[in-house]
Amino acid sequence: MDLKALRLLIVDDNRNAAEIVKSVLGSVGAQQVEFATTAEKAFSLLQAEPYDLIIVDQNLGKGDEGISLVKRIRTDPHSSNPYLPILMLTGYTEQRRVKAARDAGVTEFLSKPFTIVGLLKRMEALIHAPRPFVRSEDYFGPDRRRRQDPDYKGPERRKRPPEDA
Image (cartoon, rainbow, N blue to C red):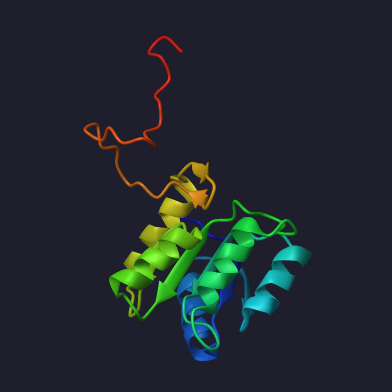
């Protein structure tokens, strides 16, 4: 995977952790990598310049500010790109945190410590296999379903197009 042409933003309040991610990405060709240490700074950078992908730590600042940033990117009317691929990195993998990230609109999720292969696989999925976006009353973001369940018959079942369409 060639990352040379991509513009990447890493958002982490731990500068050392961000430098590790930058180093890993640089080792596979990434040249345009910027940092933000706060959600506010990240949102400002996103407004000022186009980015191809953002890597954000879930636990920014005083808590789940990474989650708040993702929600803001997805839903704020002033967001420059609500469809931006977002990879969330976190050292906290409790189910409630993973669900919170998913429900905020994270595209991919990766736990720390991570491997180079794991990071690159997630990035490759973000770039080469983007998921369609879904809008509902209380959610906007990538389709949270990883697979189709042909047996689901619930009220929110999406209709398939006719076979001849």
